[in-house]
Length: 72
Image: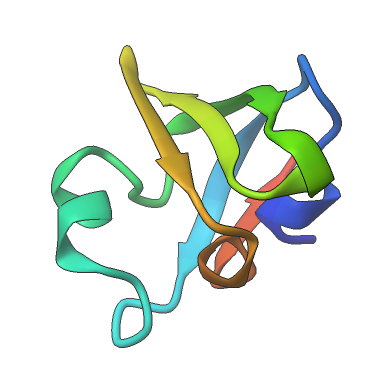
């Protein structure tokens, strides 16, 4: 499963990330294996995704979200 499989309001744990394809800024903000992530809202046309990771709110595009694996 990836971040794209989350529905609005759902929480999951990050199980793996593709570090070579994920921007360093997201890793620095807490997108690391073992951290909890929540999908807060989707913008119109479902892109970008508004997320909460370790108390940080961030927005990422769906093409980036596919590189973050999760487990519910």
